Image (cartoon, rainbow, N blue to C red; front, top):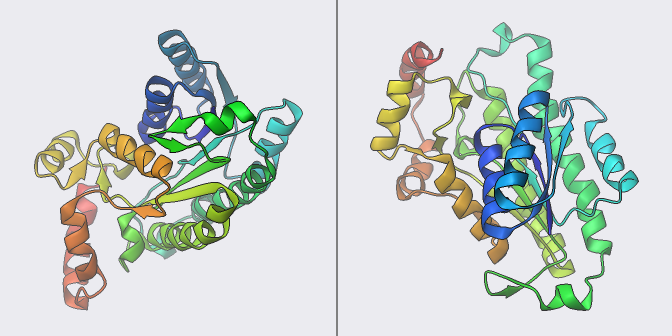
Length: 275
């Protein structure tokens, strides 16, 4: 199988690429806007796990980024069995203090490109006919499907919170978009899974190292390796959506009903923990 992973040069994307190569022996098309890092990652994974890796530099915030990436696969006869829509950005900022360029970047990366990539590669997967050999393959004890798509949402999809107003709105789009499409694709042999983790221990959120360590120790934050292992397992099991962490499940209903005074109070203090 071949997996396309976006944002694969660091963070959660790197963990997805590593796990797919190590645990599932997948060949990889690694997409990132960090060109040199991507080349090094591809080389290391190929040497370590004996899989074929292709690094591809791309700015996925461009209007036609999805079309270009899909056409690259068509031109190079790359058949994508697994699509991991992982690339993303995060910033904590009032809307009116956010530059239009940064605002558009998040909308393009989280909404437009994710939706387009899902649309383009899902169509390819639906049309695909498995070979007799592929029909005999099993993943986690289940018959192999025509294709798999994994989209990264967030627990913040249930939050109406200042400072991350664009982030949580785009993650809500990914969540509802993915769950809706699951009903369309699953009967056609394609599975789409959306993950909604809480805090993940990466540099994305800009927390100081000591606070990141504390958050992991308190199980408020999850190590990326643990998240990825669970996400891939759920994807191959055919799950529609998944949220890791008992604490996250317990707190999600509360997020929908947080009183306004508490939101305003916490908002005053959160910014000081950002770099």
